[in-house]
Length: 200
Image (tube, rainbow, N blue to C red; front, side, top):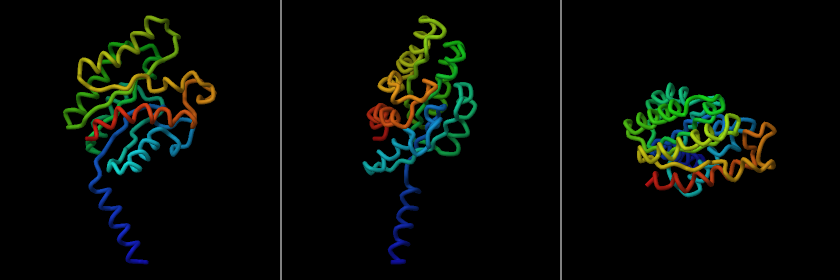
């Protein structure tokens, strides 16, 4: 029995040592705001990888309230620490909620993606939308950041990751901004098919 346990431990250590790395650089949507971290879409994505026998470890470098400027300030450390093969960027919503310049938001996201690519990582961009507080023109300018950046850089992107969640009261928290535990699997399912090609 002891030998079996030792073999299992050695096997797990070996798998961890050889596993490739994914970094999620995001805000409260990825940090699991208002729910248990174990219920969040990032954890669910890790579970999918494990179930499929895909040897990647996800490092969740997401902070509630973070902006694209915050992500840009943190990306170098995350790249050095985790040496990721893939970087998933989920940022921008807090910039939009503050009415910051779409040009600045796009510039920050582009620089994050550039630094990740320079470090040898593939990049996946997750699109966000914001409430129409600042009018249709600003809202459209904000959302168009993501497909424009994807086209200009060749980085794949996932259309609004809360498309099937945001308008369902049953899947949203009381603030109407953050998904609850019921909404998390839908986000993971939205990201999964776009992530898979980057793991080959």
